[in-house]
Structures are given as C-alpha cells and as structure tokens.
Length: 309
Ligand SMILES: Cc1cc2nc3c(=O)[nH]c(=O)nc-3n(C[C@H](O)[C@H](O)[C@H](O)COP(=O)(O)OP(=O)(O)OC[C@H]3O[C@@H](n4cnc5c(N)ncnc54)[C@H](O)[C@@H]3O)c2cc1C
Image 1 (cartoon, rainbow, N blue to C red):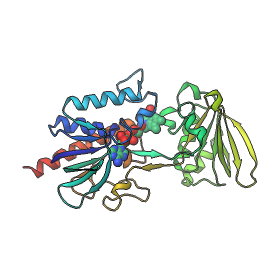
Image 2: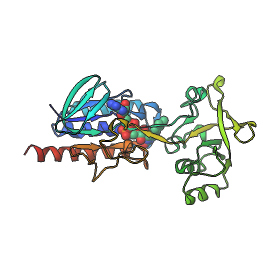
Image 3: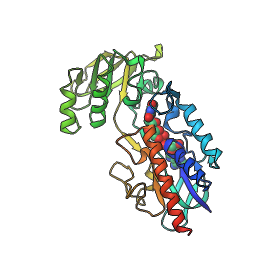
Image 4: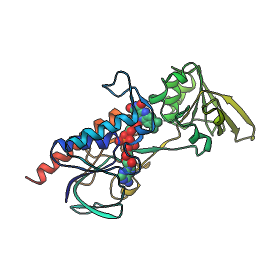
C-alpha cells in the first residue's frame, strides 16, 4: 500500500512530490496525459523566482521532476481513471490497475477553454495565448494592437493588464454587455486603451500561412457582418475547466468544478489534499501552484504522522 499518491506533475504535483519524498514517504506520482503540466506548453517563463534570465517551461519542469526523483519520488506515466474515497485505504484505478493509498494529493490542474478554431491551435504560442500575466510582456506584443476574447472577470483583468504593453486592446465579446462584476467592467471600459467590440465572435485567427498572428476575422452575431481586425496577439479568456470531474460527488467543489479546501489543503475527505490550479481560480501561476503543492505535502505528512503514531 502507498503512503502518498499524487495526481499530476505540474508545479503543484512535483513540488508536493519533492516535499513528501524528502519526508521519506516515497510518493507515487502519476503524470496524466501532460507530463510536466501546463508550463511545458510555453517557451520562456520569466516570473519563476530564481531564474533571472528566464527559463524554458519544459526545462523548468524537467528539473522539478529530477529534483523530486533525487529524493525518492516515483513518477509514472499513467492516468487516474477512478477513485473510491469512501473508505481507507483509498482505492484508485490507474490505467486499469488498482492502487491503494493512505493519502491522496490532487494536483490535476485546470485546462483553459479553447475557441475550437483550427487556426487557433495552429497559431498557439505564435501569438495566440491563454495567459496575459504570463505572456503579455513578451516583445512580440509590445506597442501592438492586441485582442482579448471574453466578457468575464478574467477577460477584463487580461484586457486591463495588457494596456500596459499593447497600443490598443480590443475586447471581443459575444454579447452587448460584460458578464464581469460591475466594478471590474466599469474599470475596464473606462480605460481609454480598451476598445470593446460587442456581439461578435472570432471566426478565424490570421495568418496561418505567415505562421504568426496578424489579425482576426470577426463575425457580428446580430447582423452577420464580417470584419478583419489587425493585431499581433490574441488572448483567449473564456474560462478554465478544472480537471476534477473524476472526484465529483466525493470531493466538495464549487459550481465550476474547482475543489474547495476545508482548511489549508485539506478537503472534505480526511486524507485527501488538494494543490494548484484545480482549486485556485484566482492566481493560476506556477509559483502559487508550487506553494500550494508544498502546503499539501506538509499537510499530508502531518496527517500520516498522526495516523501511524
Ligand atoms: C501557455 C501558458 C503559459 C504560462 N506561462 C506561465 C508563466 O510564464 N508563469 C507562471 O507563473 N505561470 C504560467 N502559466 C500558468 C501555469 O502553467 C499554471 O499556473 C501551472 O502550471 C499550474 O500548475 P498545476 O500543477 O496546478 O497544474 P498543471 O500544470 O495544469 O498540471 C496538471 C497535471 O495534472 C495531470 N493530470 C490531470 N488529470 C490527471 C489524471 N486524471 N491522472 C493523472 N494526472 C492528471 C496533468 O497531466 C498535469 O501533469 C502558463 C500557462 C499557460 C497555459
């Protein structure tokens, strides 16, 4: 039987692995389909402390994994398919095989929603991005027209943040009012650099042939009129989906599927802890996910110490 199983190898999971490994708990860590987590999908990470020149996302995550393995973490390329958390030990189904464990750390992250356009996936990292805090300051976006897609709090935050870098920020929203909280909407719309484009959707991101973002094709949902808007970046901010569906009914979560911790990283099920973006819809940063992974590991370790004393 395992003492600690960790679901996910993003910043949260691998930091939890490092801490539990250094506590001699030899954690078993499952990667899921995205070993290294979301940071492996980006190039340069400039805001992770300790790297004054920035670091490639893939390299950072490879180093995190090595660091955890050095102390005894066992990282396996496998996916959790089901979890019976109704009794101790917990019984997990991982790639069809049962795994028993005393504690479980859920660090399964959140996936961003896509526009589901072919041009979007072809131009990802070539001007299409899902995180203004992460990518907004990149040279390619400086003093250029930028597009933010969405109408909620995140879209407003992204648009306002991007006014520091872009020459103008077009906020493209499918309705004629923002969904965001009033204060956030007012702040965004009163910014002279934000230009809302109402009742519109992006139908294509240009220009796949040039292999970089040069504009977007928009369709007005009221009158079907089309227009092309020049821009150097498209920031898609239409929400995230936490990877928590497997735990629905067993673990307390909000209406959007984010796990709600009870105290610290503890969930409503004793022995199950949570860390990272699957419980955090506010900060969603590598360093915060790592911090939460550390907290979950310490909580799991203390729980095991009590159980086994
Ligand atoms: C393009 C991009 C650029 C970014 N750039 C930055 C940046 O510059 N700086 C910054 O601070 N943040 C950045 N971020 C945000 C950062 O990547 C996230 O905040 C961070 O990765 C969250 O870590 P996490 O461990 O919570 O989740 P994730 O990194 O999402 O990892 C989740 C892990 O869980 C695994 N998993 C999911 N379901 C299962 C399952 N059923 N079984 C097993 N494993 C499972 C996945 O395979 C993955 O390994 C960026 C995000 C994106 C998308």
